[in-house]
Length: 198
Image (cartoon, rainbow, N blue to C red; front, side, top):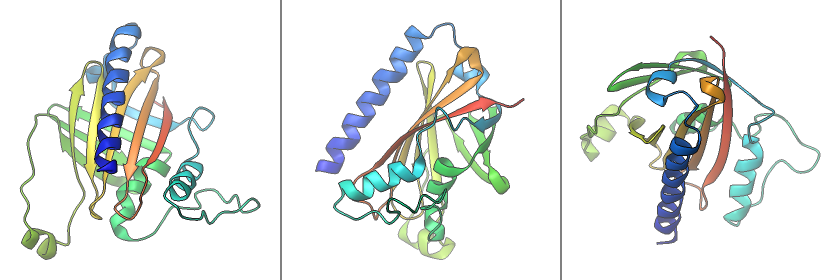
């Protein structure tokens, strides 16, 4: 019940931010026409993913593994294949986006593809599909106001909610994320910024 409350609260916050972004940042580029391109991480503006992961672990009653002196970059990256989508959206430094509505294609580092649609289509899957095909990541998106809201369903049974908005007249991409791996009690919340590279 607490998880559902947090999801609803985060969804309402994301929607209000997206609507506010649509009205208060009217000078910024339209998300539908300005999203396509190659984007490179802006580390100075972005939250540190390892810090956000550790915060979620500790908020859920766990003990973070980095310690004060072990500040290795991408410390929490890796794990089972079911977590690859989480790693891609929260750690990869380069993102290429192609838009051919209703299809969007996000390509992360090492040519990791993520294809989804914004026309409301649903995926049909059964337990037999999961076991026979080994499970697969699945995402869907929706344009709301001047934002793209993406829901991801990684193979582990968790979820992500990502809100993409453009800033600085389309030169900067802001991605607000709530990442909820199935094995975490509390969600990972972070914001990443990317600068247009093309």
